[in-house]
Length: 357
Ligand code: AMP
Ligand code: MG
Image (cartoon, rainbow, N blue to C red; front, side, top):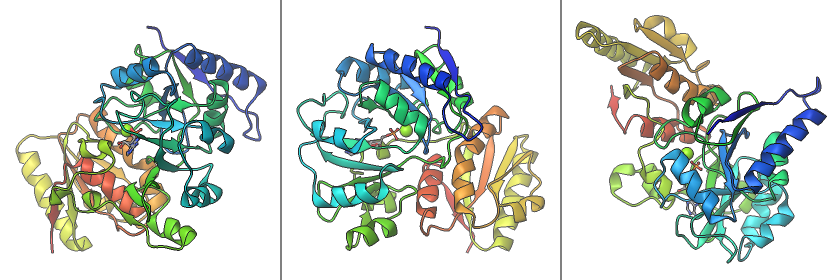
């Protein structure tokens, strides 16, 4: 299959041109006809198909090489459209939607009959998101209102934050890729299960537990399986049990005070080099000059969580592009949005972490 690349041109003020809208409408028609289209969102690029058509969902799993028990997120472009796909809307869901939608929050709700089990990985619940990205919203609208979309990467690889990574993974596998530039946030949405009281976070993201707690007036926590992956507890979001976001090179996180981290990574780099391995580090701007690695990638200024999240996946992919075999990353503070960064980084590292303390 030849994959069409659709470039979003935009007007000077950032709004979509008439031609952009025509092109997005054409892409919407592809989805209506049962095809798949990758598109930008404020989190990461999504791989979209008609959520209400089980054949489209099957195609998504096939294109990604994704296990079929790992459910898809259904994207809507208007609050009113939610009624058709969910059984009931708890008060907490309404409050969260009022505050965070459109935006990077996915809610798990009881599904209605109309949502095929193929879309929900066999579950009776459905994950729903209302993205804020204008291109995403236009596409969902033109596609009939319900777009099932996981991240547009091959299963196991880092989620794509730019169209070039989608092209790398999905060329020849899907009808079209809409190139809307770099995604703003760069990490997947926060997933919160609102079928239970109090709701529980199944995947950390830009919308933090603190933000959810303050809107709902009760303590919102993260699924224990995510915080303590060695506990053996099964994650409530089926997708969180899979190895994810992983670069080809072996990634190790090194934690501790700056001096110890720099020394430890320095020693490891020396040994790797003696063994003829190509090395890489992922570190804050302030420390970057201290590392003698073949590839040095800067995550941003120390403590800038937004920048680190925004760069994380493209840095992981660039290590692959440069054939790096051993990668060392400094650790991040787990407060606020940092919980999501560390969750993805730990998964990418297969939980390999050296504590220098
Ligand atoms: P991705 O679309 O690649 O960001 O993956 C979607 C994530 O949402 C996966 O981790 C899924 O396991 C999770 N998810 C989707 N639907 C449900 C659901 N009904 N219950 C729990 N987790 C879900
Ligand atoms: Mg994904």
